Image 1 (tube, helix red, strand yellow):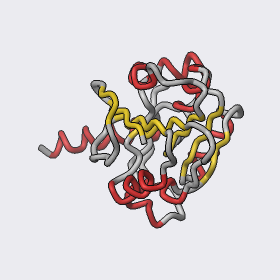
Image 2 (cartoon, helix red, strand yellow; image 1 turned 180 degrees about the horizontal axis):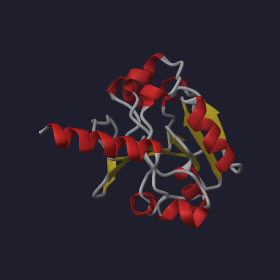
Image 3 (cartoon, rainbow, N blue to C red; image 1 turned 120 degrees about the vertical axis):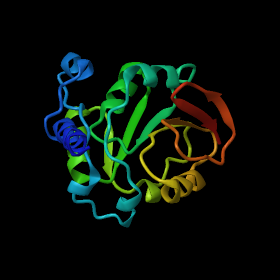
Length: 186
């Protein structure tokens, strides 16, 4: 039993501190692979306790989730981490791309890798969404219900919400469901 726990711990440490560059990073020359636990990051927000670790989104899941969504919308990734989804949004042809990340360290990595995007260091619960433009808001299960409900309450009209790895209910009309995502409209 103890051997299994030690093996699991070593595996988690390896994934976080010595991540193997996956196919996406090798193809793009980026650093978005691996996991990053929030406990080791300095984050000034009181909502840190509701955050979920950084984990990159699978490109296949991303492609399926954005299928049929108008690329003229402003794309906003809440909990953008190192910027993988921002890169995929640019490749998909979204006209304006914004990342919101409450970790200075992760936002800094995203800024370096995503010069085409506006990367904002800030808490998603306090983010003020652009009002007079259609939005596509992307979330890869970045936070727990207290923050999720604040985000949903502040969404403007004409907003598409993509929720990958949905673990919590969302009080919006669902318009599409995939194997690892749900799509909503305000």
